[in-house]
Picture 1 (cartoon, rainbow over the protein chains, first blue to last red):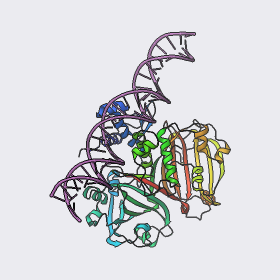
Picture 2 (cartoon, chains in turn brown, cyan, orange, blue; picture 1 turned 180 degrees about the vertical axis):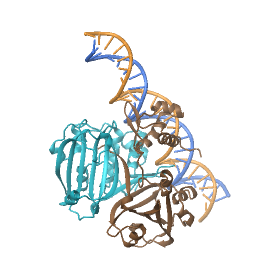
Picture 3 (tube, each protein chain N blue to C red; picture 1 turned 90 degrees about the vertical axis):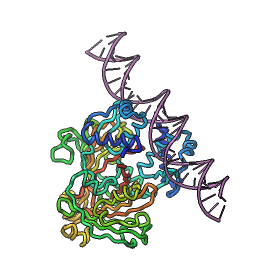
Picture 4 (cartoon, each protein chain N blue to C red; picture 1 turned 30 degrees about the horizontal axis):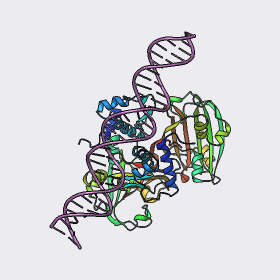
Length: 239
Length: 239
DNA sequence: ATAATAAACCTGTATATACAACATGTCAAC
DNA sequence: GTTGACATGTTGTATATACAGGTTTATTAT
């Protein structure tokens, strides 16, 4: 339970304190030296934790003043980051339901949304329909590469595949590349999402990689356009 | 010209070497100690530069092995990060043209896309049409708050407002919150973007802040859905 | 030959120190 | 009263050291 990493533990503690309004929006965190005394660590360790808060949009550091708590996390993060549906569901309490439509082992065919590099590879294909407040909202289609995850139990597809990967299999999910486009809905999608003809859908295609940079999951998420909302926090890179 | 910050200079040097394939995709960067010798710096300074490469998706660090150069930046970044249209245009050479439709001083009205907190404030309103390959693609609507930027010359609106803000006015643009939705196009938009009725558009609304956390720009970018593409690089946050 | 061990190299974490740069309040000089 | 100099507290940068933990290669023992 206790975290291995000091600075990650401090980061998480600060996040919960910010989200629980113990440190309020618009106010400043204790100074780095104060925090280092509070947590019994060096200032550098505190700075690593704060760096994490910074890149995730929790604070803005202002030289000579301190770390300002931002009012940004009030936003909801429907697609941003790498967050599983289960985690979103829990954090937003959005009354969602998941229906597993397909769960089959197959070789990845050409012409699918998967990249060329994995065509012909063995994978578990999962198709799921997500309903929010009993309304169909998203179709999730996943290829899980079998050389990394040999088999995906039905109960896992119904529940949370990320929890299974990380906590049962010990995989370290690290990063993903996501591409968002707007496309016309094909008849299958129209029917599943209960939308009229000519209606467009938002398609989020992503490739997810492990800590050692092995590709292990390819996903296509098809959203009803009227229910789609994506919030991004971005920092400007100095030139 | 010479950068003040050692680690930022190293970061930029590594970025250009990666984008110019001096360090090739799939290969490893020199080790941290080697880099520190190369750049005449301490290992910690190198690590700060690498941390920047990591969060921006250029490399993946693998413990015991090294910093792997990722094949991710091949993607195009049409909306991601805080990048001005001018910068995108230059980096992608996308043959774009900008037409300034409006440039007026006004007070921000209620019912606009700007948040409540700035309604009634003085601002410069800029409306621009972006054409790519002579096709209308995006409508940009900006409120630039007058208490920070008193006036925006026409030539600047035509060229690059970010360059003006940063290099002429010395403003430090720091972060932005962006929200992406899909909405039906109103008749004005339909006409400007030359799209049929019932067609949807992608709307990116953003608030941009300075280093001291003052809000200074509110933007609404309306994209033709068929030309819209958004690529995100995301890292998973450990729980 | 094979397997275990050791060495060498890599990144990850934690600490300590020093100084630069910015913000703010205090106090003296004018 | 205003200004200016200074002290203090804050974050930013750069350096150095030590050890933990993972990877690879070489060596040694069997």
